[in-house]
Amino acid sequence: MTNKSLLDHLNWRYATKKMDPAKAVPQEKVDAIIEAIRMTPTSSGTQPFELIVVSDPDVRAKISEVAWGQQQINDGSHLLVFAAWDNYTADRIDAVTNQLNDERGEIPMATEYFENLKSNYLPRPAEVNYAHAARQAYIALGVALVAAAEQEVDSTPMEGFEPEKVDDILNLKERGLRSVLLLPLGYRDNEGDWLLPMKKVRKSRETLVSQV
Image (cartoon, rainbow, N blue to C red):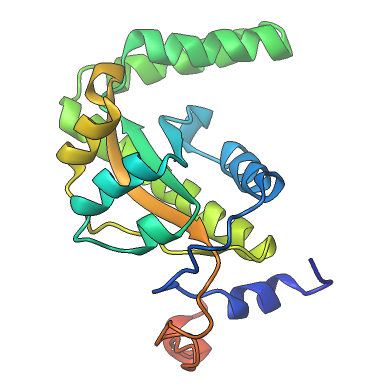
Protein backbone atom coordinates (compact mmCIF):
# COMPACT_ATOMS: atom_id res chain seq x y z
CA MET A 1 0.00 0.00 0.00
CA THR A 2 0.99 3.60 -0.55
CA ASN A 3 0.66 6.62 1.71
CA LYS A 4 -2.53 7.75 -0.01
CA SER A 5 -5.17 9.65 1.93
CA LEU A 6 -8.63 8.23 2.51
CA LEU A 7 -10.03 10.49 -0.20
CA ASP A 8 -7.34 9.28 -2.60
CA HIS A 9 -8.47 5.70 -1.98
CA LEU A 10 -12.13 6.61 -2.43
CA ASN A 11 -11.35 8.35 -5.72
CA TRP A 12 -9.41 5.26 -6.82
CA ARG A 13 -12.22 2.78 -6.12
CA TYR A 14 -15.19 2.17 -8.38
CA ALA A 15 -17.76 -0.58 -8.82
CA THR A 16 -15.49 -2.86 -10.84
CA LYS A 17 -17.26 -4.37 -13.84
CA LYS A 18 -14.61 -6.86 -14.92
CA MET A 19 -12.09 -8.54 -12.66
CA ASP A 20 -8.93 -10.41 -13.58
CA PRO A 21 -9.46 -14.09 -12.70
CA ALA A 22 -5.68 -14.66 -12.66
CA LYS A 23 -5.19 -12.35 -9.66
CA ALA A 24 -6.26 -13.52 -6.21
CA VAL A 25 -6.56 -11.23 -3.22
CA PRO A 26 -3.94 -12.18 -0.59
CA GLN A 27 -5.41 -13.60 2.60
CA GLU A 28 -3.96 -10.83 4.76
CA LYS A 29 -5.90 -8.23 2.75
CA VAL A 30 -9.11 -10.26 3.00
CA ASP A 31 -8.53 -10.56 6.75
CA ALA A 32 -8.08 -6.78 7.07
CA ILE A 33 -11.39 -6.18 5.27
CA ILE A 34 -13.14 -8.77 7.44
CA GLU A 35 -11.77 -7.17 10.60
CA ALA A 36 -13.07 -3.77 9.48
CA ILE A 37 -16.50 -5.34 8.97
CA ARG A 38 -16.32 -6.89 12.43
CA MET A 39 -15.62 -3.43 13.88
CA THR A 40 -18.63 -1.85 12.13
CA PRO A 41 -20.93 0.14 14.44
CA THR A 42 -24.48 -1.20 14.61
CA SER A 43 -27.70 -0.28 16.38
CA SER A 44 -27.33 -1.02 20.11
CA GLY A 45 -24.15 -2.92 19.27
CA THR A 46 -26.17 -6.00 18.39
CA GLN A 47 -24.30 -6.79 15.14
CA PRO A 48 -27.42 -8.55 13.79
CA PHE A 49 -25.81 -10.08 10.72
CA GLU A 50 -23.18 -12.61 9.77
CA LEU A 51 -20.57 -12.59 7.03
CA ILE A 52 -20.06 -15.60 4.80
CA VAL A 53 -16.76 -15.60 2.90
CA VAL A 54 -17.03 -17.73 -0.23
CA SER A 55 -13.80 -18.67 -1.98
CA ASP A 56 -14.92 -22.05 -3.40
CA PRO A 57 -15.26 -21.42 -7.17
CA ASP A 58 -18.05 -23.98 -7.54
CA VAL A 59 -20.18 -22.28 -4.90
CA ARG A 60 -19.45 -18.86 -6.40
CA ALA A 61 -20.52 -20.18 -9.79
CA LYS A 62 -23.85 -21.33 -8.34
CA ILE A 63 -24.39 -17.92 -6.75
CA SER A 64 -23.51 -16.16 -10.01
CA GLU A 65 -26.27 -18.11 -11.76
CA VAL A 66 -28.86 -16.60 -9.41
CA ALA A 67 -27.26 -13.14 -9.56
CA TRP A 68 -28.01 -12.31 -13.18
CA GLY A 69 -24.78 -14.00 -14.25
CA GLN A 70 -22.64 -11.18 -12.87
CA GLN A 71 -19.17 -12.37 -13.75
CA GLN A 72 -17.32 -10.54 -10.99
CA ILE A 73 -18.60 -13.25 -8.64
CA ASN A 74 -16.66 -15.83 -10.65
CA ASP A 75 -13.64 -13.73 -11.62
CA GLY A 76 -12.97 -12.27 -8.18
CA SER A 77 -11.19 -14.56 -5.75
CA HIS A 78 -13.56 -14.03 -2.81
CA LEU A 79 -17.26 -13.30 -2.42
CA LEU A 80 -18.54 -11.69 0.77
CA VAL A 81 -22.17 -12.45 1.56
CA PHE A 82 -23.80 -10.22 4.16
CA ALA A 83 -26.64 -12.16 5.81
CA ALA A 84 -28.95 -10.50 8.34
CA TRP A 85 -30.78 -12.14 11.22
CA ASP A 86 -34.25 -13.19 10.11
CA ASN A 87 -35.62 -11.88 13.42
CA TYR A 88 -34.60 -10.57 16.82
CA THR A 89 -35.07 -13.18 19.53
CA ALA A 90 -34.59 -13.24 23.29
CA ASP A 91 -31.67 -15.65 22.86
CA ARG A 92 -29.93 -13.40 20.35
CA ILE A 93 -30.30 -10.27 22.46
CA ASP A 94 -29.32 -12.16 25.63
CA ALA A 95 -26.14 -13.30 23.88
CA VAL A 96 -25.23 -9.64 23.29
CA THR A 97 -25.93 -8.82 26.93
CA ASN A 98 -23.93 -11.80 28.18
CA GLN A 99 -20.91 -10.92 26.07
CA LEU A 100 -20.97 -7.33 27.35
CA ASN A 101 -21.16 -8.56 30.95
CA ASP A 102 -18.35 -11.07 30.37
CA GLU A 103 -16.01 -8.55 28.79
CA ARG A 104 -16.87 -5.35 30.68
CA GLY A 105 -18.20 -6.69 33.95
CA GLU A 106 -21.86 -6.60 34.81
CA ILE A 107 -23.36 -3.13 34.43
CA PRO A 108 -26.97 -3.02 35.67
CA MET A 109 -27.79 -0.09 33.39
CA ALA A 110 -26.69 -2.09 30.34
CA THR A 111 -28.70 -5.14 31.39
CA GLU A 112 -31.76 -2.94 31.87
CA TYR A 113 -31.18 -1.37 28.46
CA PHE A 114 -31.22 -4.72 26.68
CA GLU A 115 -34.26 -5.91 28.64
CA ASN A 116 -36.04 -2.80 27.33
CA LEU A 117 -34.75 -3.61 23.86
CA LYS A 118 -36.36 -7.06 24.08
CA SER A 119 -39.66 -5.54 25.18
CA ASN A 120 -39.58 -3.25 22.13
CA TYR A 121 -38.24 -5.64 19.49
CA LEU A 122 -39.71 -9.03 20.31
CA PRO A 123 -43.39 -8.08 19.83
CA ARG A 124 -42.69 -6.64 16.37
CA PRO A 125 -43.36 -8.64 13.19
CA ALA A 126 -40.38 -10.70 12.05
CA GLU A 127 -40.26 -8.81 8.75
CA VAL A 128 -39.89 -5.48 10.57
CA ASN A 129 -37.04 -6.88 12.65
CA TYR A 130 -35.38 -8.40 9.59
CA ALA A 131 -35.55 -5.03 7.79
CA HIS A 132 -33.89 -3.37 10.78
CA ALA A 133 -31.15 -6.02 10.86
CA ALA A 134 -30.64 -5.69 7.10
CA ARG A 135 -30.02 -1.95 7.50
CA GLN A 136 -27.16 -2.77 9.86
CA ALA A 137 -25.68 -5.01 7.16
CA TYR A 138 -25.74 -2.01 4.82
CA ILE A 139 -23.65 -0.07 7.32
CA ALA A 140 -21.16 -2.95 7.29
CA LEU A 141 -21.12 -2.91 3.49
CA GLY A 142 -20.12 0.76 3.53
CA VAL A 143 -17.28 0.00 5.91
CA ALA A 144 -16.23 -2.95 3.72
CA LEU A 145 -16.08 -0.77 0.60
CA VAL A 146 -13.83 1.74 2.34
CA ALA A 147 -11.66 -1.02 3.83
CA ALA A 148 -11.26 -2.70 0.44
CA ALA A 149 -10.26 0.61 -1.13
CA GLU A 150 -7.74 1.21 1.65
CA GLN A 151 -6.25 -2.22 0.88
CA GLU A 152 -6.31 -1.37 -2.86
CA VAL A 153 -8.60 -4.32 -3.48
CA ASP A 154 -11.39 -3.94 -6.02
CA SER A 155 -14.97 -4.67 -5.10
CA THR A 156 -18.48 -4.51 -6.53
CA PRO A 157 -21.48 -4.12 -4.21
CA MET A 158 -24.48 -6.10 -5.44
CA GLU A 159 -28.18 -6.16 -4.65
CA GLY A 160 -28.99 -7.81 -7.97
CA PHE A 161 -29.52 -11.43 -6.97
CA GLU A 162 -32.27 -13.79 -5.82
CA PRO A 163 -31.89 -13.85 -2.03
CA GLU A 164 -33.95 -16.96 -1.39
CA LYS A 165 -31.85 -18.96 -3.85
CA VAL A 166 -28.59 -17.70 -2.32
CA ASP A 167 -30.04 -18.66 1.07
CA ASP A 168 -30.63 -22.17 -0.26
CA ILE A 169 -27.14 -22.49 -1.73
CA LEU A 170 -25.52 -21.45 1.58
CA ASN A 171 -28.09 -23.12 3.88
CA LEU A 172 -28.77 -19.79 5.56
CA LYS A 173 -32.40 -20.39 6.49
CA GLU A 174 -31.37 -23.17 8.86
CA ARG A 175 -29.12 -20.64 10.62
CA GLY A 176 -31.86 -18.01 10.95
CA LEU A 177 -30.22 -15.78 8.33
CA ARG A 178 -31.27 -14.11 5.09
CA SER A 179 -28.83 -12.85 2.46
CA VAL A 180 -28.90 -9.09 1.94
CA LEU A 181 -25.85 -8.05 -0.07
CA LEU A 182 -23.02 -9.53 -2.12
CA LEU A 183 -19.52 -8.08 -2.41
CA PRO A 184 -17.02 -9.77 -4.76
CA LEU A 185 -13.37 -8.96 -4.05
CA GLY A 186 -10.64 -9.12 -6.67
CA TYR A 187 -8.53 -7.01 -8.99
CA ARG A 188 -9.70 -4.98 -11.95
CA ASP A 189 -9.01 -6.16 -15.48
CA ASN A 190 -7.14 -3.13 -16.79
CA GLU A 191 -7.71 -4.09 -20.42
CA GLY A 192 -11.26 -5.42 -20.28
CA ASP A 193 -13.24 -3.16 -17.93
CA TRP A 194 -15.11 -0.56 -19.95
CA LEU A 195 -15.81 1.54 -16.84
CA LEU A 196 -12.20 1.86 -15.68
CA PRO A 197 -11.11 4.84 -17.85
CA MET A 198 -14.27 6.82 -17.22
CA LYS A 199 -14.41 9.88 -14.96
CA LYS A 200 -15.92 9.35 -11.52
CA VAL A 201 -19.18 11.29 -11.35
CA ARG A 202 -20.71 12.49 -8.08
CA LYS A 203 -23.05 15.30 -7.11
CA SER A 204 -21.32 18.56 -6.27
CA ARG A 205 -20.99 19.51 -2.61
CA GLU A 206 -23.38 22.39 -3.24
CA THR A 207 -26.00 20.00 -4.62
CA LEU A 208 -25.56 17.33 -1.98
CA VAL A 209 -24.93 19.28 1.22
CA SER A 210 -26.97 21.92 2.97
CA GLN A 211 -26.07 23.51 6.27
CA VAL A 212 -28.47 24.68 8.94
